[in-house]
Amino acid sequence: MTPDNAIAEEYRSLTPLQTRILTHQRYSEGASDVDLDVLRSLDLDPASALLDVGSGTGEFQRRLRAEGHTGRLCVLDMSQAAVDAAGAVQGIEGFLGDAQALPFPDAAFDAVTARHMLYHVPDPVLAIREARRVLRPGGRFAAVVNVAETTPLINDVVSTVLAAHGFGRGDGAGLISVNADNLPGLVDVVFSEREVITVKSTLVFHEPEPIIAYCLTLLRFGGVPDEGAERERVEADLDAEIRRRFADLGGVWRDPKGYVVCVAAK
Image (cartoon, rainbow, N blue to C red; front, side, top):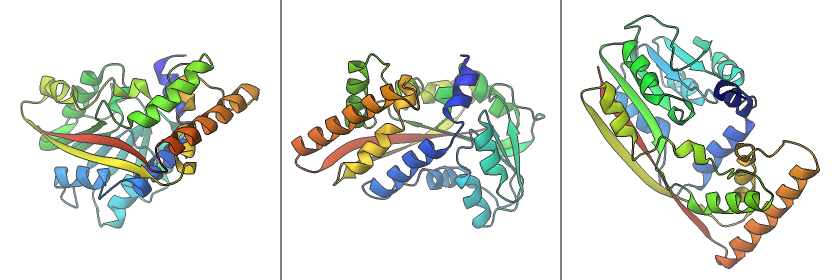
């Protein structure tokens, strides 16, 4: 399976992604609003033209419209489900395509965002170059990625269970290929100036069920089939292992996490 097809397959349904997003919204300790951090970093004029590369569930675009953004809003994603979700928001232009070859002319946008998606791109520097190409002079680019060591408890329990069944890590290990440690350097290759905003937080759970639900959304990363007896065995063992570890932690599961917003201007 090619990288493009793998991404389209992973996100053919947005339900797992929505589960992960809701988990972070509900169980993060303290204020943690990545989309707000991105918007603040861009300092958008309401009439600005914005391209969101890797649009996800469409909530970012819906928020922009709800908060009075009147300018052009375009999204590009390799998942048809993501394009459809964003396109369901009134006035959003959706495009199915590749971040490394944006189907837009030079200097078409005032802002370009790449939220939690550069680790899906074979050549992230090329994707950043394309973002800069379609920016107008003075336009701003904002990229978000996690810190490399984010949610270590969740990652460990998923990778341990999957290894016992002969699968890959399944903890999203590929998602740390671009992280807080190396993103600034990648942006520096393309832009002459940038700043980094770092946000640290913790996922805090007082019951095991939301941890289990979150971890189940990661199984496809390890190559576990969506259905069948093999899937059922993995799910049963993952459920049991999470409950055992939760009890060992005394009934409170605290998992540190973090992300960075890297912002640059053309």
